[in-house]
Amino acid sequence: MKRLFSLTVPVFILVSCSGAQTPPADVLQKTSLATQTLMSARFDGSAQFSRMPSPLGGLVNGSLSFQGVMRDAGKQLDFLMAVDVNPPENEAEKINATLQLIVAGEDEVYMKVDALSASAGAGPAFPLMNELQNKWWRIPSTDGANSATAVTADPEFLRIQSETVDVIKDHGYQTVNGRKSHHYDVVINKDKLAEYLHEVSKRRGQEQQITEIHASLADTDMTGEMWIDAETYHIHRINWHLVPTGGTEGTDTLFTINLYEHNKDVSIQPPQRSEPFPADLMLLDASFDSDQQPVFLE
Image 1 (cartoon, rainbow, N blue to C red):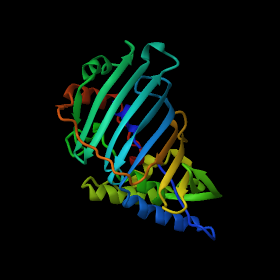
Image 2 (spheres, rainbow, N blue to C red):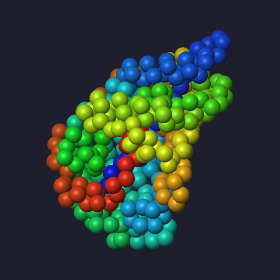
Image 3 (cartoon, one colour):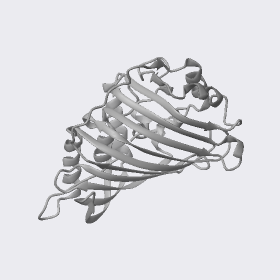
């Protein structure tokens, strides 16, 4: 189940001023500061992924699309997501779902399944998931006993985009969302990312060793593009391509997110009624796959 959400959430962009072109390093630094004070933004995006081997066995292709709004630099989220999972070797394992997720606070994560279609061979959890439809469910906190399966949005996500990348090509200015924007080709700097995630884990009281983080990143190449507002330094768009390099295992992912209507007056509220997420489904989800993805994808 976590796999359906771990690709959610939410990737972003960079900027520059009029006159002489601002060096990319300065743009990224200003973007980091702008991200930390971002009041709100609307967003939409999509992803396509191919995983081998999958928790269901064999190759799995899939796609997702999402749209919503964020507040407080991503600490609060309200978005809809449509997920399609298609194992080409077995038509009986198809899964289609439409979900709504609300992150009202660090320990306030809610989910509602609006529609679900799962074939008989989709796995032991999915027949039980029919019971989830049309109700709001509270998802356990990452501080809970089963943190491996907790569904959370990472408020560090936007900062990661500007603080752990290296610019490999500067395309100059382009217009995005009607705004003059810097356009860069970028690559994740794994040393910077490992240091960043190590500091984040310490702040959360769940410290991970840098060597462990490096190991989790070693078998994936991460390249992309970023568009950053030349005046406000808000991110407008990000594309990422994650390619497994460890042989026949891993997930090849293409991911795009667009951000717009920055710093508008929006409100995100928890649902008036909700129930604790069923423990049986959390346990089944944990049995699917114990692999850990980098934090910026979770």
